[in-house]
Image 1 (cartoon, rainbow, N blue to C red):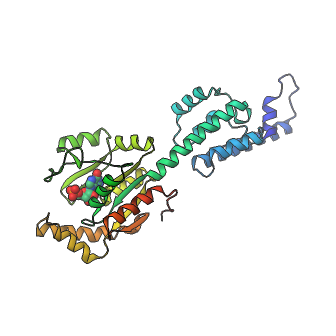
Image 2: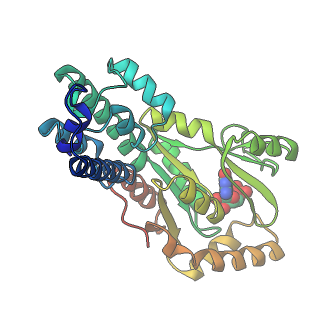
Length: 314
Ligand code: 5GP
């Protein structure tokens, strides 16, 4: 690496090196470029923390990491694009021409602090978005209402739906009740994080903006949505933690569905069929919580918001 660097940096007045030296130098330059590309790829894939790369650059300014341009370095950090990179360099008062190994002490400390703040922020976001799903009538709504009332730090996302309000439901609290045209507009404008037609009837969707705002402010966010929505969130926000709420037994689920008396017999039958399909998806989730008791299940869900790392998904 340093061979390549010294070749590039040598004074133009020196006599041209013999051919074999030039070949060796160009091979070394290719190897150095490859090594830098590998470092960037490992930052991008989160194999290596940018902080570790910065520390290596400091320890060996002429090594692979030390020769990385600060622009290439920042662009390889996940979620930093050209605009964010330029803003960061302005804010940190670092010239884009600099290499990591050539940063002054204060520049290095400012860059380090910037990277630490980013890591903390993304760790918070990783652990704080929780999706609660589960079969129909398992008590997701009751558990999430309990969380809203007893854990005010947790933001319970308010979904948009095309179904009509039930008695006692309040617009903006239980749901945003919208018509089909407004729901279509929200989809087209990219305002929904996920959306689905549930029980072959009405459409439901999660507004994106309040969630992003709450996560950025360090709040925990709970989404109580159906299985299709949970799968979409897993795709678009892999850092979300997925919890599946289970009934103590199948018989108990049937009893709860019939007992609540909000659906007629045909609808109950349809929902029981859906529940069987939904129960079969439980292994796709990071955690399972059994709803024996609402307060206990709510506490378990809130506790899972605090756990630092989600287990690896199959
Ligand atoms: P209900 O009409 O009984 O309030 O809710 C019916 C179903 O819609 C529940 O399974 C609930 O989890 C789901 N649901 C509520 N809001 C959303 C949402 O924003 N997205 C999705 N995908 N499902 C939702």
